[in-house]
Image 1 (cartoon, rainbow, N blue to C red):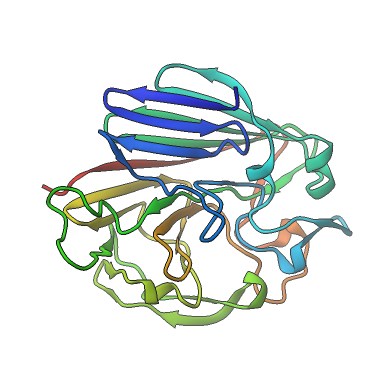
Image 2 (image 1 turned 90 degrees about the horizontal axis):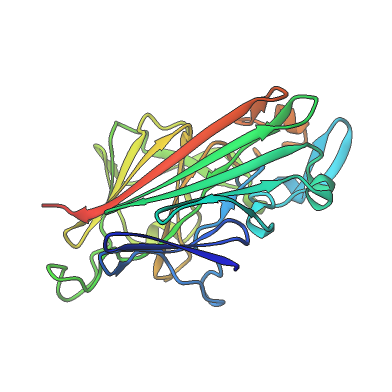
Amino acid sequence: MDQIELSSGGDFARISLKGGELMAWSVEGTDLLWTPDKFHWDRTAPLLFPVCGWTNKGQVHVGGHKYELGVHGFAADEPFVLADRGEDFVHLVLRDNPRTRRAYPFAFEFGVTYRLRSGRLSVELDVTNTGKGAMPYACGLHPGFKWPLAAGLAGGKQGGKDYGLIRFDEDESDEVPRIAPGGLFSNRKRTVPLEGRVLALEPALFKAEALCFLDTHSHGFALEANGRRLRIETENLPHFVVWTRPDAPFLCLENWSGYGDPEGFEGDLFAKPSMIILPPGGVGHHRSVYRFGSMD
């Protein structure tokens, strides 16, 4: 068994033990998640741990030692083990091992729980420091959704594409960081066409880089298009990232606890901005809840 299927009423989800990755989510027959391909993007919804975003030169420093730790960490490529499951939920766990310790010299348990309800999917991340010293970490969710949302469904826009909009719960800045070479976060900003709490979407927005809204006031966001709404509510995931590739038919709506290295950063992982420091035995809890349905 390398994949686990969940069901609730007319809804369905499938999760892979590799990377603990959500591979499919269907609401009453509507498939919402991107199907990987080698041309556009070969992932669906990877889990991010123990860092989010890019590291400077693909490396981190801890206690004077250098470790090879690339973009978004290693969790997406590690095998998770089944800890508990029911018809509509599953709990998977990744524990440190010789491979992870070569990149990240800490003892940990990284758990993910998926819970499926009618029109609703929750994803909970729990990080436990099982070592004897403090542990820095970041984690996040990186789901890719079919885009335009709900294209072709009854009531959708006829002729042309409705790329939709992002609606924030609170007022947000219309400036986001520019992304420097190597995926690093620059101090320079770019302005996005945010009007009030609404960001109109179009592919040209993403030709240069992802839109990274750091330390958002909002804990709720919605992607709206074609008479449908995909709403996301978050807990302890303060950074919201919207990303796709040029002309690709998917859109990633990402929630992160941390973010990529600032341009020029070569400090210790404990000093990296946005990292969470867990004491021995400490537990960090993070969650995103996704709801899909009609805007009526």
